[in-house]
Image (cartoon, rainbow, N blue to C red; front, side):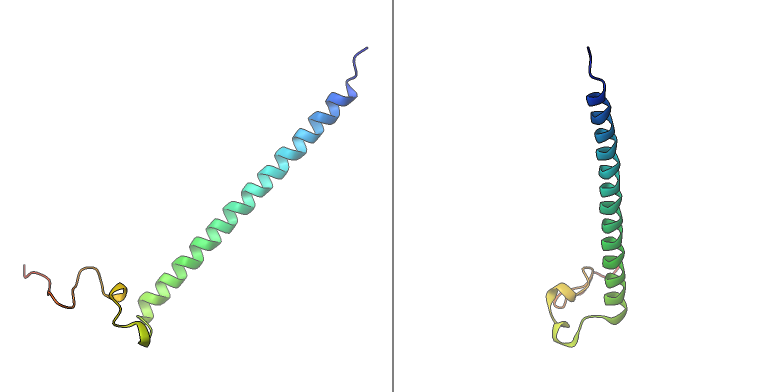
Length: 75
C-alpha cells in the first residue's frame, strides 16, 4: 500500500512555505523602497538647507564642480 497522506502533507507544507517566502520578499521590497524614499527625502532636505553651521567648511560639503582653491576653468 502507498501512503498518499504524507505526500499531501508535504505538498501543503511546501505551498505554505512558498507563501511565507513571497510575503517575506514583499516585506523586504517594501523596506528597501521605504529606505530609499527616506534617503531621497533626506538628500532633498540637505540640498535645500545646505550644510549645518559646523559642517559648512568640510570638503564633503563643497560641490564637486567647484574648488575652494582653484576656480573652474573659463569657457
